[in-house]
Image (tube, rainbow, N blue to C red; front, side):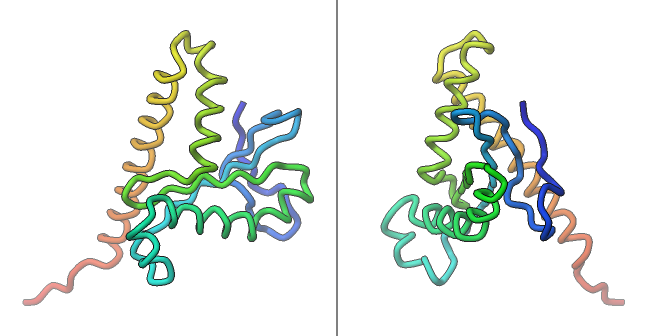
Amino acid sequence: MFGSCFGHDKLNTRPADVLVPNWSLGKPAAFDLTVTSLLNPSILSEAGVTAGSAAKVAECRKHDSNGPKCSELGWKCTPLALETYGCWGAEAGETLSRLATCLAIPMRCTKSKATASIYGQLSLTLFFGNNQVANTFRSTYSKPKYS
């Protein structure tokens, strides 16, 4: 069902992290996960007032950068934006809700349990991924040792 879409384009850009065939009306969806910080100076004032505003900016940025390539390939550009404090973007929420609907029957559970499973798995994946990046950063930029 899921497949990586590395190497599908001529310009060595990657319009998605995951390509999902037959997502909507036979058209593949290019899922592109992005995590955005609320502390970005360009969105800080709005992010402090409106939950999801940083994710919305990230979704727009992904559409601008990946939309044309996805259209050329016949894919639906689907950004899955997450704010660093846990708020998912509107498109991510809609997409993950639809995914939960599709998975509930084969998982033999309710949509709410499928949704919880998806968010739980994504949370763990992001946690371990962030931990791996932090550990790499720590080992690369370790504190100088004084004698």
